[in-house]
Length: 401
Ligand SMILES: *Cc1c(COP(=O)(O)O)cnc(C)c1O
Image (cartoon, rainbow, N blue to C red; front, side, top):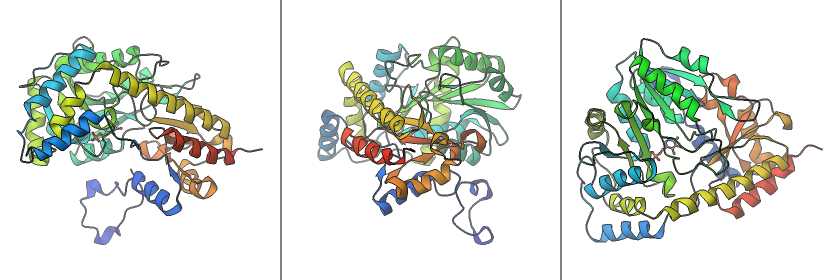
């Protein structure tokens, strides 16, 4: 997220706490892709539409006149579908009347939760590399981020260092912001790691806010299945669980998300949310309810397709000479550029379109400690097989002989 500021500091009207946050790397790299005609594996949006039943339901809702403000917490049918979905897949029970809030995507749910829960100076434990909105949202709240660095272990998997995790908790810690399955690494936190996080939350009596937008994208060869933190002992009562339709139903432009948790946490988040957007997506809400109620086969099919695409991309990256950290979930694979002579991911990604006509994203911009991610770049595989075939054909030109 941190690139060059757009306006000279002396005439910049922007508040100081937002000045470190320039144009997002996604905007820069997507513009580069358009300018150069490169295949864009930078930004993580699918290039196919979601389930037909969902699309039809949205069109029908518009025609049927569901075009005015929906209820503040979201339409009852969607809150019930969100509750039913969490019961079906994770055995978690939430009361649709008081424990579920519909939001403008997961992004708004995260922002509303952090703004609702953090006083200025409070600390938020998160994991770097982190999703780009986290740092900006924590800064907007006047809170302070305490990143724990995920580092590749000997098996090529990103892991949490238990000592670093423990050291990140202080008397000022207000909450833990956890994203699993994790963007940009594709890591799925293991039960051991989640148990350590949960134990620290209980010991320090802090909240957990979980970003689980990739909950259905954990591959069959992962070390661990997806485990919602809220399912661990003592965690349901202190966890706000966030997800959204964008990734699960290939509709990232719809921005329908939700937060689930104990009533006081949901009420606090609602208090802020009502002044951010108030409500959103009236005709899309019933359509997402239809999607959430699709049979298990939809979810299995999504995962199988994405796993095939992952395998296709990873094989292509290997052929091009990258060392790949094979992801266990999400839309993304990260690759180490050092075997290709790269020494800086930002430079590497800026020159990649000229070198071979592909766009990727340097993950170092998602770290407070840029050295930890200097050699890593992220490729998205939520793209049609033909697109991945073309991208990997182009990447093969990088191979050093
Ligand atoms: C895409 C993404 C989001 C944003 O979800 P929206 O529903 O589009 O707001 C949040 N967190 C992570 C980790 C993501 O990858």
